[in-house]
Length: 53
Image (cartoon, rainbow, N blue to C red; front, side):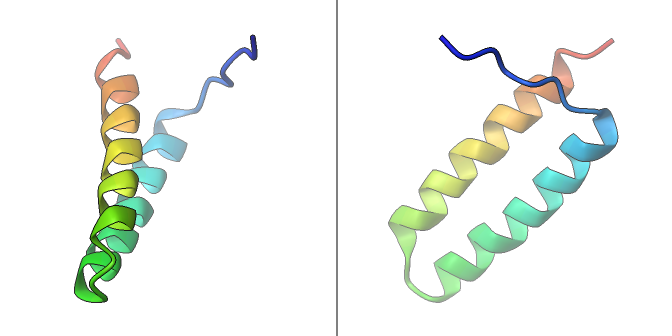
């Protein structure tokens, strides 16, 4: 089992912004499966951010 690295709030926000852009681009290019996978990663980052105090 691999331990997850804890990210800073700034890193999480940056990742969410960048991945959201990539998901939008994937949708525009018709790569809907890729967009869905990216959105799942974004959701995981949002959950990590929400768990922070």
